[in-house]
Length: 122
Ligand SMILES: N[C@@H](CCC(=O)N[C@@H](CS)C(=O)NCC(=O)O)C(=O)O
Image (cartoon, rainbow, N blue to C red; front, side, top):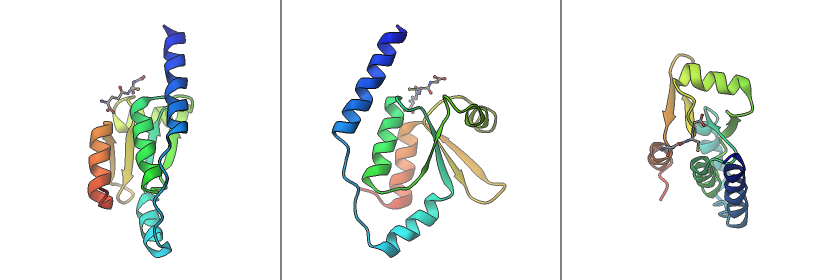
């Protein structure tokens, strides 16, 4: 079972690599404005999780430079996610709107809807 899961994970990563979307090219001013917004965000994720791959592809396609945090192998990130976010489930987008106002957005569909609304993606 462990091997099957490992194998499926590698397959997902290989398919992702072979079919990676090309990032859009914005003018520098527009990209800087988006980078300023995404600087307050980070994605807690697992490398081979299909839902995380879906979100990473969305980042890449839309040139969203959002920090990736490995919540499987990095104990500190795993604890942050569980204790501050509320559960050890990925993907989870952490959005910091000021030092005391942090949102932990779980579920790939919710994250994609948020990104579409926030950055006016098609
Ligand atoms: N419906 C969720 C499913 C997310 C999900 O099942 N994530 C798995 C990894 S693929 C997870 O976090 N499992 C918890 C764990 O392994 O500790 C989504 O679309 O984000």
